[in-house]
Length: 230
Ligand SMILES: NC(=O)c1ccc[n+]([C@@H]2O[C@H](COP(=O)([O-])OP(=O)(O)OC[C@H]3O[C@@H](n4cnc5c(N)ncnc54)[C@H](OP(=O)(O)O)[C@@H]3O)[C@@H](O)[C@H]2O)c1
Image (tube, rainbow, N blue to C red; front, side, top):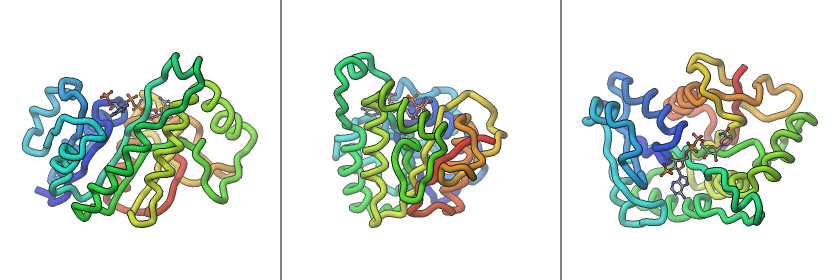
């Protein structure tokens, strides 16, 4: 079995589940360590089938003991974490960012265990130097999300800000609208602008495949590519 061990954060969400489905069947693939708030949300059939490759720890993102426990032997951390839509925050316009803030502790625990590689989900609303939006990209990434999902959008921004830390081999993958489309859709990666060939749609299955390939190929170290199917 591979000596690789990927800690998946957000494995109970839709993209996290797509990642488990993509990676667990890989022959000689990595072990997956999962930090979850509630393990009953995991797909029991899949977990049972590959139980020799899965380590599950129940705990929150601010529970240092649980983070320390789940980080043992980990070689790479992948995050699909993000906030749920909230009517309360839509009305109050409050923008707390507990997930983004939790990465300060997650990074400290990574350093304690000598883990350098960190891949984290964000969105193209998070600004990257040199990016030059077309007007439609600007409207759908910079204007609409902060209006319609103010807190979720703030979380995406904070996650990217805290994770893009030069002490780590980070990759911030910035996703557009996520869909249930095929795994075989091609994924464009790069900066937004007139030359970006991706659409503003991305299937979670093709995202999972792209992220796993990136853990192997390391093409985007210390970079923040926007992704989109084409
Ligand atoms: N849907 C879209 O089109 C879209 C577009 C751009 C960005 N996004 C962002 O991308 C993220 C991933 O999308 P998705 O649809 O695959 O995810 P999702 O199904 O919404 O799952 C979110 C994941 O984050 C975890 N989570 C949320 N708040 C948490 C907290 N406070 N502490 C610990 N874990 C927490 C959830 O854990 P539990 O299962 O324990 O709740 C779950 O595993 C979304 O959360 C969203 O913010 C979505």
